[in-house]
Image (cartoon, rainbow, N blue to C red):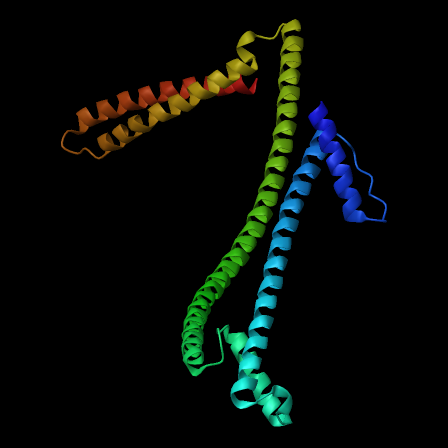
Length: 278
């Protein structure tokens, strides 16, 4: 608990330092927000310390460079009685350009032995940078090609998706229509079944023969179709007998037998048909 209160106090002090005279924004004070702000304050403190160390190091280096410059200037004055103040405007520009070049190349001095390696390193860096740029251009060209192909594929997929959605909508409409028709047919089937049952009950109450019911008529119709199917080979057999010439009397007997059999079947068919019509 004391550690939590200490963190909250540190966070409050850090926020006051950050915002100064400006009001501190309102925030919900709880364990989580306190922990986050405390973590940020610690990182900020470490960063400030690092920045302070860098500044102090730069100040020290600046002081050393200044001392070195003063020493070199005094040596120059002692050896050749030369001072930068005695230079012409053109000489001052050349001297400043030399100093700026040394600073840009980060050489320890302005001697030729320092400039040549620095320029060589800079040239090598330039070639490496150009080579890297060429590699990046090639990679970028590949990425653009892949991106174009991807965009084309995406467009095709979108079109296919639209077609699929349109087809799905059409098929859904067909299915809905078929379902409605199915429901309608089911309702009609139930209506017809109920009507047939009612009619059969009414006819049965009036003394109708059970053989004339719907089921019986259906059975008779199936039997009639079967009998018609059975007469087909008999008719073919009769036609084969009609073509026989060697023994007319025997052929006549066979013909008569076939005719009688055919008459019997036709009579039975006629009877069944008459019963169905009743």
